Image 1 (tube, rainbow, N blue to C red):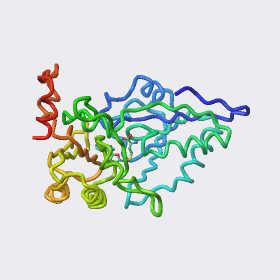
Image 2 (image 1 turned 30 degrees about the vertical axis):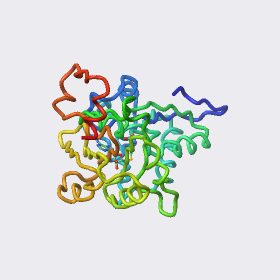
Image 3 (image 1 turned 90 degrees about the vertical axis):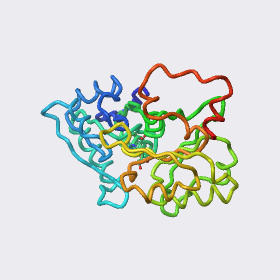
Image 4 (image 1 turned 90 degrees about the horizontal axis):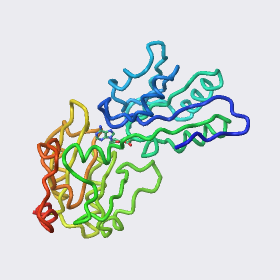
Length: 271
Ligand code: SAH
């Protein structure tokens, strides 16, 4: 996205998507922004390997916000970005994945623009697409998945969660972020809405990092699968739908993809 100029711009902040982990999954534009930065406000989901692109002299300010842990209040992050930008610093706000996918990037852009700061957003690979891909799962496939819904399994307290019944009927691949802590809140309404317990499901945790861990199961066995393996915990995405049965990791890593015979991929997926 291009810079959003304002009349009396007083400083500039670049929201940069750091991708799901591996430093070589950053975009070239993200690397350029990191090389320019004099200050970086860094989320705790950002893999430390990504920080190698910063100058040695850059100040790194960790502003983690992991659910359940001590976190930096959002308003404080806004004030800090505004203050640093007004001092003339070249500020990068480094966020895991894509800044505009469950990253509060929208809120941060609003706060910065209200303060008259110029904001640039550098997109990153989001975990909900790059994570499944790391285990060979395409989130859409015209043979069995006409689209994908990226949803949260952890709605804001008092806030509106996804309409699980509508999603169960949608025929879309469901990719659930922040869904491992309270997986029953995802599974129970989907089953109640008629999604079969045999629907393929998958979990990928810490995708694109050396700690990556994954499992394939079904909607009916998802909760037990997570309980059986503590390594599958946060950060992890859940994939629910026919595509979740696709691709072993060896397949994902070996290019080119084998061309399945027409019409077989989804039946393989379901079986
Ligand atoms: N903006 C991020 C999402 C932030 S919300 C993005 O676009 O990816 C945090 C959630 O993202 C985690 O709870 C988890 O569901 C997911 N996530 C982030 N990094 C991940 C990774 N490396 N592997 C699997 N899931 C990840």
